[in-house]
Length: 110
Length: 113
Image 1 (cartoon, chains in turn brown, red):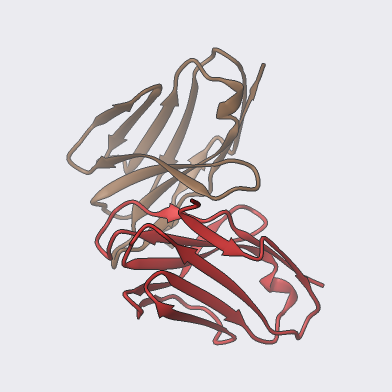
Image 2 (tube, chains in turn blue, green; image 1 turned 90 degrees about the vertical axis):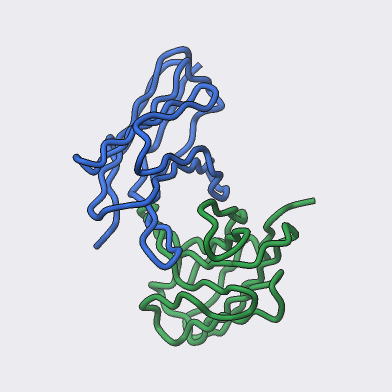
């Protein structure tokens, strides 16, 4: 299976702290994306990093990609209660398919 | 002005019934998708249509039949519903079949009793 795996499965932090979640995948990729899913809602695209990039920033988000280790990390700095959600990595599975990881459930307490 | 919308939001039905879920996008995108998210939050693609043409058909029971009357709509019909079909079904769209980013609908929560 191409499915990626994320860890931790669940993460609980206080507002203001940083949250780091990791994604590992199995096959070579052209790009990797991170999506957020709020409870009971659809997924929202956060950021995309290409295979020739090592790091990318977007606001309080920082994504790294290590293609030699087939892994990526998402760092959310100065977290807020509104960041509480599940976070999924997704890789391009060929034929325009997105292959999603298992997700990290983030809980940010006020 | 919802970008990708799905109806119904919730669907509770008995085993053996046939049901349909509808999806519409007003983004002007060419490509639409159906995903299934199980109780463990595992999200897997089922189908994809590009401009009304089926381009992705994963290993899905043939009780599931997608239909795209036009490029803004992608419906999913499920025959003879089974307990294992209980899940959240998400519709998504992308600008075209090569676009990297997908835009998701809010999901349809299907519970088969």
